[in-house]
Structures are given as C-alpha cells and as structure tokens.
Image 1: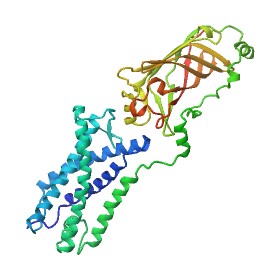
Image 2 (image 1 turned 45 degrees about the horizontal axis):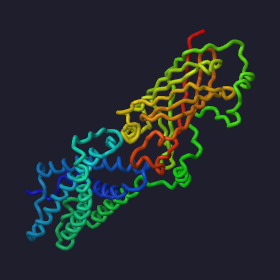
Image 3 (image 1 turned 120 degrees about the horizontal axis):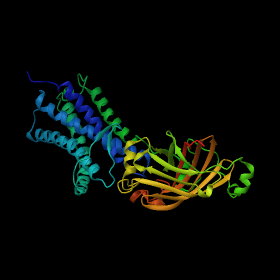
Image 4 (image 1 turned 135 degrees about the vertical axis):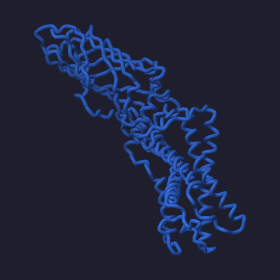
Length: 421
C-alpha cells in the first residue's frame, strides 16, 4: 500500500525548517543599523540558524530518498511540474543560502569566528576572498527566491485542499483531520509568528543617556567595578612632595627595591559601545617595578600586556579584538607601559607618567593609583584613561566614535612583595 502521509520524521523536519526559514528571512532584514551589541548578537544568531538549516536540509534530503512518501498529486502536467520545481528550488535555497552565507563569513575582511549558539565552534571555509562578492549576490538572491517559493508553496497547498478538494494538508500537518482548516490556520500562524520573532529579536533598546554618551565620548569615565580611592583634584595634584613628606614622616629612609607582583591581580578595561559599558580584562600581563617612596626619582615601572589574552566574556568579540582592525596581535602582540616619572600626590596617592606603546604607536600616558605598604607587602589599585583612536585601535568602520567611544577606562589592582629588609 502506498503511504498516505509523510513519515513523522519528514513532517517534523518539514515544519522545523519552515519555521527556521521564516525566522531567518526576517532576521536577515534586521541586520542593519548602527554597530551595537544587539546588531552583533543578531549576526551571530543569523549564522547559527543558517548552519542549522543547512544540516537539517541535508537530513531532509536524505530522508526523501530513504523513507516512503505519498505519491504526487495527480493533475495537469504543468501543475505537477510547477510543484516539483518549487520543491527542488526549496532544497536549492535551503542548501545554497547557508553555503553562501558561510562563504561570506569565511571571506570577510574582519574575520569573526562562528560559535554556533555561542558554544560550538564552526570553521571558516579555506577559500579566496575573491568569492566574497559573488557569494554576497547569490546569498541575497536566495532570500528573495525563498520568499517567492513560500508564497507559491502555500498557494498551491491551499488550492489543492479547498479548490480541488484533495487532502493535501492532512499528509503533512500533524494532527490534521477532516477538512484540516484549524490545523492550516494554526500552521500559518506559527510561520507568521516565526517571521515576527525574527524581526523583533534583540531590539535596539531606547537609551537616551547612552546615545548622548556616544556623541560625547570624552564624558566622565564610568567607575570600574573594583573602584580605587577617588582621584585627586588639580589642586591636590599640585601639592609639593615636601608637604606630603611632612604629613607622613618616616623614621628611616625606605630603600629602593625590586617588587614582585603576586598572582591574582587584575588588569581590566571598560569601553563604551553605543553608550553601553563593555567590561573586559587581560588574563596575561607582567610588571617590573623598582620603587621606593623615598627614592621616587629613581623609581620606574614597566608593564607588558599580552593583548591576545583580552577577555570580555564573549569569545567572538574577543577574537575580533585580536584582529587587524583592533589590537592586531599578529603584528603587535604586546602593549607596553613604561614610566620613570613617579610622583607623590599626597597621602597614599601616586601618579606614574610615562608612555604607552600600543599597535606600534607610542603616546604619553598617566596612571594614578593608591599605594598601601605593610611590612614588605604592597597593595596597589588605580585607573587611567586612554584614547583608543590615538593608537589606531579601531580601523575602517570602527574608527569612528559614534558606535565605540574614543575613551577607554583602565583599572588595575594587585599585590606585590619586596625582598625582606
């Protein structure tokens, strides 16, 4: 006996792919606007859904040849030919669409790794960048072809069901019985719901304060998560060293010593993306510190930061930071801060003036920090602010400050020990 319904596996794959396609087409239209965390998240989800459609479509194609299926509906040759063409064109869209998207990601100028749903790594295709423009044209054409096929497919199913009186929908819609009107309405509502979800997921949030901050990137810095003591005012900063020495007299001169930084310290940063704070830290850095509170003129600090260790909590964003548009770690793997001008600002507040070498660009930089020494152990916490654009961090579309503010706040805290006196 020939099958009267598609297998449960075929039915499940049919509707799952249909819903994902509707969602994906709508999501593709939403891939516009200012660079923002929401847009970044939409792109990552779009890639994940595309690969999912590709894998499910290959499974559906295999099942088509393995499991029995109902015979094709009878009718004029042109209608049967059109129905067959629509089905095979759907397979073309479901396979070629994700493949061209995969090519686009693999040949993009900014190489952002793909993590399916933020967890499973997906490799890039080893192809030439010359594939990028053809893939982009075909990818866009596949989206419009999918929309046309959706309309033809739905119109054909409704024509067979109600104009010709053939129980087509009962063969493919789960739990469809009788005239299947309710099941058809429910199925169409699901597809429409998937389309609406694709348009509304990760909406741009209304952040009037954030927009103002994006327009004025030099606004007051956001306090870091582990905020040190308040920075001094200009008047406090001008207090002479002699005045500070009178406030904190010492019985004996503190020797100049080489300090060893203990493990567990933090070197963090806060950037602002469309006004929203993005916090991160560097997992690998080392410091050479020769310091004495009584020998500031002879004190010096050198900090080397492994830029590839940047961690913002998002693996795809972290890999983007390593690329040529941002840190360019292949050519310049380290950032180096070196200071020989250390000043006492009063109390336990200090300032280190030096240079920061980042991406091969060297610019003056100043750190302000608090220092508390108990015995041979010192505890340090401080802040700084740098202008990323001065070092070329952010090339091409990322060079502008409307999306990513120019000012980046640095915060650090650590303990260090010196040789016992």
